Image (cartoon, rainbow, N blue to C red; front, side):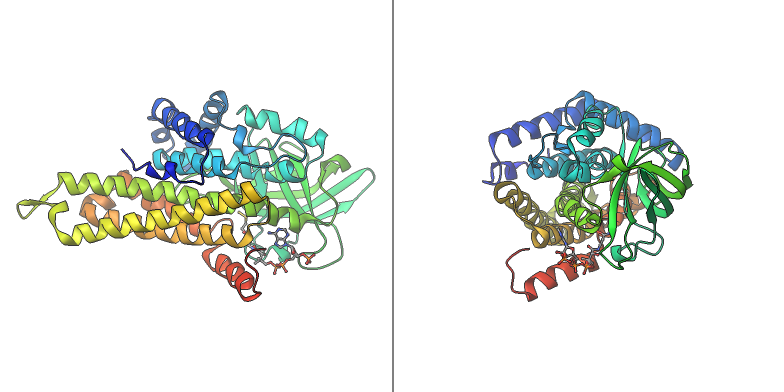
Length: 391
Ligand code: COS
């Protein structure tokens, strides 16, 4: 049984503890065996759809969207969900998180008509969402986005390429960022909601990764969308993207935390069961040192993650610095914790399909997506050097 003493921390309210219990029940009853069907890039999309359907049926996707104008995310609920789901099953965490990230801009900036159309089916687990920001030449440098959206009649025409898009190819709608103005860099970007199947919009390529999940390159060739597809004011695209990442970067830290907790659980089991030179592995001080470092890293990351979530929830202000700290520290920590778990498992730790081997592949992308560790350091340094407690 994983350590759940953190739930008594003052960051949480009673409803969060109830949610944690619901998630544990869901994971035990609904996830068993599902992910083993998703062993490659072809089967993973169908498995994600099934996980989303079950999460929706259980009422667990409500935290992913803000349905009322002026409402706010409960970032602690998002983080707890990712922490717990990732500990049980990385793909379930991914499927959950993308329902939130893919509709985050609609929750934060959508009109009432856009909310009413797009959010309820995502909460119900009937429709799948995606967030299309990155391009071949614009990953860390969002200001280099080259996809254009040109005004034409009562709408816009989109041209360009998006890549590394999670849920690409299986999503029902995408929030797409494109350049609408002549300005360069972060100015002149806008956000659009594009439905799958819109003429001129295609999945150019499915991308295969070390930990399979639906990921694709998308092509827009004279893709016409109505003016109602514009999300928020024209020219606010960069702000919309960054505000969304302010919420979801903290949750990436929470997912890393869940993966690390699972690695510690596995390492503890290994220390109890494995006998070497006539003694259990856990009786050796070298093993104990590893366990101690893992436990400290996990608690430190949890404090940063839930500090960021609590600050956002209770103070409602920008948490750019706190979110970057949480993501940076938790993802880097989890990589080390999982690596130590693999070491304790020895040869078994690198056998395909074992839990620690799966974790070893799953954690790697979290240090890259939604802002690399290098970008998080830049963001943190900028805010600290500007003398701001937070931005
Ligand atoms: N919330 C709201 N507004 C924000 C913001 C935030 N979190 N961050 C920046 N802005 C605003 C700024 O206030 C500024 O507005 P003004 O021009 O009105 O002053 C504007 O956006 C530009 O900000 P800044 O100068 O900080 O932008 P940079 O181009 O320097 O940003 C980084 C650079 C690297 C921080 C940004 O491009 C980034 O986060 N890149 C990583 C993107 C990423 O995560 N990619 C992965 C793809 S998503 S899976």
